[in-house]
Structure formats: C-alpha cells, structure tokens
Image (cartoon, rainbow, N blue to C red; front, top):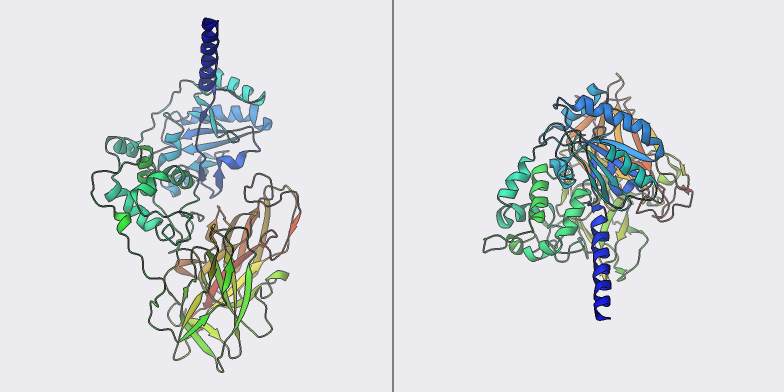
Length: 568
C-alpha cells in the first residue's frame, strides 16, 4: 500500500512538472511607438488572437525575402484575428532614418521603434527576419523562430483554443547584435555611479517621502524591492510619464528618458539589482528643496485657497472654487508659484483669471473656441516658480477673480490641503498679454468603440507666438496631436501625445516658441478608446458625450500664446 501511494505521488508530481514545462513562456507587457508615431502596447491587443512580430533591419540582405514571407503569412492569417507588425531590432537606428526607411520600402505593416533593443532582447530575438508570436491576453510567447511549418501549427493551435507551449524553431538571416546587453553582462551597471543618478534625475522628485509617487525611491533597498514594477512601467512607457512622441517638437517638461538610461536601468534590474561596492547610498543623501519657501522672494500678493479635506480612500470629484481678489486696478502677473498644502494628494491644480459672472469652464462646455486668461497650473514634480516669457504676462483686470480647479487622489491616509499661491507683479505693463485658447468640438462616442477619431480646428486672425500646448481628455482619451497649416500651405506638427494619460496633463512648454502668421489654421486631432480593452474605462457599455465629470468626456486642445511683435 505504501509503495502504491508513493508511485501515485511520483506520477502526480511528474504530471505537474510536465504541465509546468508545457506552459507558454511568459513575457512582460511592453509598449513602443511606430514610425508613424502611433502607440502600440501588447496588452491593448487583447481583442486579437495573437500579435505576430518580425525583427527588421533594412541593412540586412535577407530582409526582402523575409518581408515577402510575412506578407504571405498575413494574407493567410490576418482575417483570423492575428495582427502583424515589424520591430526594428538594430542597435543604433535613428528614428528619422527608420521613418524614411519605412516610406522607401513601402512597408505594409507598422514598424515599431525598439528603444535600446530592450523588447527584442526580452523576446529572445537573435536573427533579422525572426518571428515572435505573442498572446496579448496571457502575455506569453507562443512561437519564436523562422518561417517553418511549426509556425503555422502554432497559429492553428492558438486558433483552436490556445497554444499550451512555446515552440522554438531555427531562424536564418543576419545576426542581431546587442552591444549594450553584452557590455552590461560583462560588467553590470553600478548602483551608486550609474543607477542612482538616473533615479535622482528622473524619478525621485515625485517618488520621495511625502511626494505624489506611491512609494519613495530613497534607498537601494527600496529600488530593489520595487524593481519588477519599475521594469514594467519603463517598458510600458508609463514612467517617467512618457506621453509625447520625442520626434515631434521638443519640450522642456516632457520627461524624456534616453535609450542609454533605459538600458542601464533594465539591465541592472535584470542582473538582480546589485548593491555594488560603494559604501554610500546616493539616494539616501538626496536633499530636496523646501517646497514651502518662495523661490523668487516674498510675492507681491499671496492667495490662500480654502482648506479642503481629503479622505483616506475613494475617488474624489474635481473641486472648483472661486477666490475674490482685492485689486481696484488692473494688475499684470510676471511670475507665479504654487505651494501645495499636501502634495502627496494634490494631483493637479488649474487657475484662471475670470470675470465676475464667469464660471471655471469658461465656455468649453459648448465647444466654442475660447481665449482665456490662464494663470498657471500645478502638477506633480512641478516645484519651480513659473516666470512668463520676457515682456509677456497675465492680465488681471480690476474686479476679476481667480477660478481654480483641484484634483485630489487619495493615498490611504486622511489629510487636508490648503494650497498657497504667490503672485509676482510687473511694475509697468508688459508688451504682450498671455492667453490660452481652447480648441474643441462636439462628439458622441459609441459604446465599445475602440478608436473613435475626432478633429477640431481654429484660424488665428492675427500673428501669434505659441509657447505651450496641453491635451485634455478623460479616461477614454487615447491620443492627441497639435498641428498648424500656414496661409502659404506649409504644414507642421507641433506636439503629438500618442500615449495619452488622464493622470498626467501638463502644459508642454515649447523649447522654441512657434511663430504662426495671421490666417494660420491650427488643428487638434485625436481618438478615444471606449472599449473594454481600455483598462481605464469606467464603463464601455455607455455612449459618451461631453461632460464635466471624469466619467464623462472632453476633447480640448489648449494653445498658450501671445501676439507676435509687429516687427516679426
């Protein structure tokens, strides 16, 4: 009896072991931009049977043959719910060169730009023209290899109910070199000299004790403990908040992170997040500026917002308040600083100068294009006072008030916020007044619609200089782009937000302000994802129209500008 039980247990363990081996290999979620600036995230393709990626390098002699093969595969399988894309796996290809390469080759598939080769290496791709078949629902690798009969069998297996193992086949083609992976394999990035400086520059201002980040990055122990999450948010482009397409315009507050820094962080995490030999911990020594001091000296006027209670848990509606101002004459603001009452819960704050009878939304609810006096906004990580461009400012006409909108996020601890705003005034009126113009349109988003596209436009009747741009949608927002067409027919994109997030809505400040002559037509284009495949969607079963609450929607592009000099 004992012997029979032992054999039964051995058989069971053998079955469990074989079953475990048979499961498909797990892959981490990832997101990449393609050469058209479109955003692709593996998990957002859960409505598809599988994602089929082929490694691509235009310099490989065998690429034409591989392209012919994947086109044939597409003809056979795309109608069955399989989605196809190419992934650039070359070590150092500039985005501009990739975009030109795609146009020249007339590629029929999206060409994904693999920042620093991190996705290609995580999928185990070794040859140009190699195929990876990915299950976006289970985040698993179903097949990796060349165009062999095993590939069609794997696709058929997935169609019949789900492949139960990862199939690996030989692949031909040019070898893919991973120089940074090899370098970091020989010598792992050092925590003190390589990793900590990146964390300090990119992350720690928000991820610190009392900051808006959900945990503090203040020691090696904390970084190592959170390293799996850090790796995931880097590869899915959630953090740093990498919403913008880096090849369209350039903005001093866009949270760019270089491929080299990405490689350093991910390879260090993959190496086990070693502490290294350094005796000091740079993150533990960080000294952040006192957020409760005035950077430009004592303001000319200080505004205290009413005290607001924030519960420990739950979702709070936006809070709109008006604050009366005592000015009996016109005032011009040259700079402004926000000191949040509790920055761990204050997600963002917007402040407008409004007339006595004007509401906070200022006319956006009927989708008119409205030019307004936007004072400034606060967002996580924004610690510096905002000084307006030389000879420009925000006018506060006499008897006007300040209208503010607060967005709080609960963090598990009940608290209160009493934000303070400092205004610095001009002694003499500046040359130009800053305005912010909303450009939007009416809409109705059907239930379960995955890509509902919208466009709106406005014509500037005078010469203007655009200094900032802000995209505004709610939870169903997917992407938004700002572009301009001058009277002579020249068109250019100013800002592209292919990875829109309701949680992160800064005004992107152009490094080089854009001069737009009178008659320039500006466009705001974008899309909503009202499907069940949008993880932020409150309810995909509802048709959605304009509304002020976060579960409704808005479609507004904000243009911050001032009149151009007459000598322009």
